[in-house]
Length: 121
Length: 392
Image (cartoon, rainbow over all chains, first blue to last red; front, side):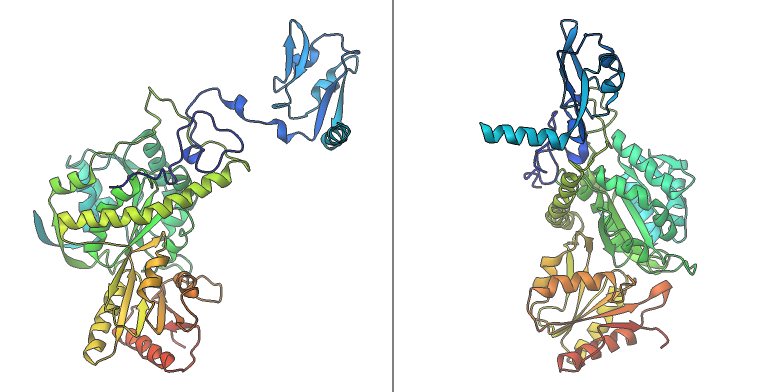
C-alpha cells in the first residue's frame, strides 16, 4: 500500500496560521495544542479601531477591566498598548473611558493615513 | 478458505459485518435495510461479535452516534435506506468533513413522495456531493466484497473518508443469491486492526475536533476533502487488487463488459448492470457489437477510466435510476457527458431514466436502448433524455 503523498491528509502542525496553504493546515481543522486561540487574528474583523491619546490618559485602567478581548495591554501598572491583532473594535473601551482618551476611528481612514504616510516617506 | 452459500444481499452484508466485528454499530431500521440491523443485532445478542450496538431513535442519531464513536477512536458503522438516509443527510456531511472513516451500507430505495419502498437510486444520489465515497454493488457477492474493502478504503491515511456501500433494495437486498464468502480469519486479517491517527480518547495527545472554520480556513479544508477523494481513486484500485489475492475477484473503479470492440455501449449502476450484461450477451450472439460499462465507484467519479473505456465507441446510453429534475437528464448522465466532452466531438451520448420507484428493467428495455443506439450511430437523431418503461 502506498501511503506517501500526504494527499488531503493535512498536517499535524500545532500552529495554524493565516496564509497557510491548503495542504499545510491540519486535517479537518483538528486542533492539537491547547490555548492557541490567541494565534487566531480576530483583529481583522474590526471596522473601527480604538486610538489611544497618551496626553489625556489618567491610567485608571477602566478600559483594561472592560475590554472583552483582553486587548488592552498593561505595562508596569499603566496603560501600555492596544493589541490590534485581537481587538475587534467593539468600542467599549472608548465608551467607558472617563476622560475620553480613547477615540474610535474608522479602519479605512486609518489605512488612508498609513498610505499617505507611505507616500511621504 | 472460500465457501459457496445462498444468502440475500442483506444477509451477505450482515455476514460481512459479523466478520469485520466493528467496535460500534448505531442503526435504526428502515425498509429494505431492516434485516441488516435485525440480523446483526442478533449476532450482538448471541455474543458472536464484540460490537457495542446502539439502538438509536432516528437515523440522524444513528450517524451522530457513529460520528461520536469514530471521533473517539472506534471503528464505527451504521446502515440505512431512503428516508433514513435523507434524515441522516446533515450528519453525513459532518462525518466526511471530520474525515471519519465510517462505513455504511445503503440499501437503495426511492425517496418519498409519493411514498414508495422499492428500489431506485434517488437516496444515494442525494448524497453524491456530501464528500462520502460511494461504491455500488451489482449483486450480493459484490455487496459483500465491497463492504469488506470499504474499511480499507475509508481508513487509509491518504483517504480518511466515510464509505457508503450501495445495493439495490429488494432486487439485491431480499433476493436469494449464490455467493462465495471468505472465512472469518481471512476477513479479519484483510481488514486489520483499526489504528486511528487522531482520536478523542487518546489522553496523551489531546485534540479538539469539529471546530469552527470560517472564511479563512473552510475553503482550504474543503480542498483537502477533494484531494482525499482524488487519492481514493488509487487506494480503491490498490485495495481491489489486494482483495483479488484473497478472493480471486478483482475490483477497480469501473467494470468493462465486451467494451473492447463495442460500437455502442450502455452505462449503468448496480443490479440493472446484470440485466444489461445478459442483453448484451444475447445481442452479441446476433453479431451486434454492444457493450456495458458499470461504474463501481460513483464518488469519486471515474472520469478518466470512463473516457478511456469509451474512446472508440460511437454512441453511448447512460441509464439513470434517479431524476435530477434539471430537465436535462439524470445525475450519471451529467457526469458521463462531462467526462466525454473533451474526448472528441462526434460521440453521441443519450440518457435513459428507468426503474424509478422499483419499476422493473426488462431485457426488452435494454434491447430497445441498444437498437436506439445503433440508429443514432447511423445518423438518426433522438431525444437527449428518454424514459424506459414509462407509460407514455
